[in-house]
Image (tube, rainbow, N blue to C red; front, side):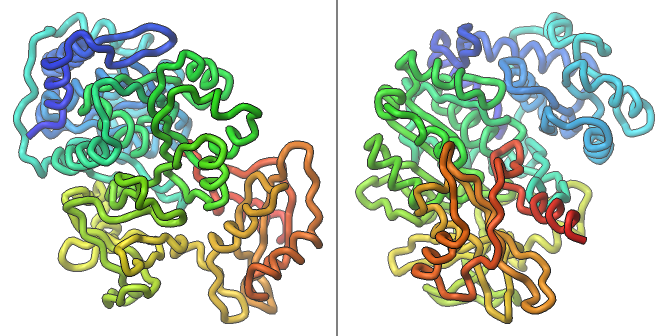
Length: 501
């Protein structure tokens, strides 16, 4: 088994169909496969062998995808790093993964040159590096077939830890990514006629597997934007060719501010949100204004996807991430690992072919991530209803204990999102001498709107138990986010606590 076979099959069946369009230029599946073959054979000439690690650290592009599949074709392991990494962050992760070769851009060259000869790094592929990507392709051949690998061999390593601040290299297998790609294509009813808009970074599991890999598998076309750019997105939507739209909750919130939303979206058939929990109020407003249900699934870098909520739209349950993906098992357990009954809240634990192999060179982290029997711990609190629908309650680490009572921030955030003046919010617990922790709400108001703290508090008292109502409300212009769009509560807490010590 080799994940790169998915590209080869799409190139065989649909050689002349567009695989990628970027800045108005299209590349067909035959052309993309040819580029990947040239990179693969070029890497072989450079001495790269099956199982060795090769780095990839550039913004989304045609070359990113061609290099990714070129590495996979020769049985090597592709280490995908955020193109936003700089300085010590970049050096730390490149040193950790010990890749022999890395494809990057010239802005990273100075930091990476320091690692040559010491951290295992031998060659840097970029315009002013050891050789350019064009030169690498020129040394290779357009004819090559992916080498067969064991299904449990590592295909890619993705670094996670954006919300915890502790990066871990998640080792994903050929079988795991293949299973995930097939599951996504199935639940989204993807075909070769789909054109998917992607502005989410490919180093992240959402962009790399959910959007890129599943689209290549189903022979659709990827409309690439290097980053989120509202004006460019609107321009692309005006072409009337985009059928699938992928974004994070904050993007949907921004789109809801547009006056003629349904017309703006054109013939879009599918909208999907991930990377962070979507407030029910946002889902309802989107459905009312566009007629399209925002589809969600539940997943994580260590195991994705786990659930989908929309294969049968008439069975969609607002507030739930849906039912289990075929072939995936989920148990709800307490903190000691004991199995809980249906309807009880506990940690979501997952087993299936979608689960990671391990964390790279991190046996302690790997051991802590699994219960016996291959059950990976999600760190999320959830519960099942009687129909097998999974509901995410909150992150286990985000739980606030105030005066001995448990408060799940997501419940408070859901209530805040029902306030018309609130655009975004984040609820965290801050140290308190009397209560242990106090509930604090950080709120971004909608443009031109003002928010009264006393009115907010009065409203929330009608929706929540008194101990759940925030004791403090902080109005801010924005909230810190990861490259995938997740609100970084640790950054909020760090900044706020630091300013009040």
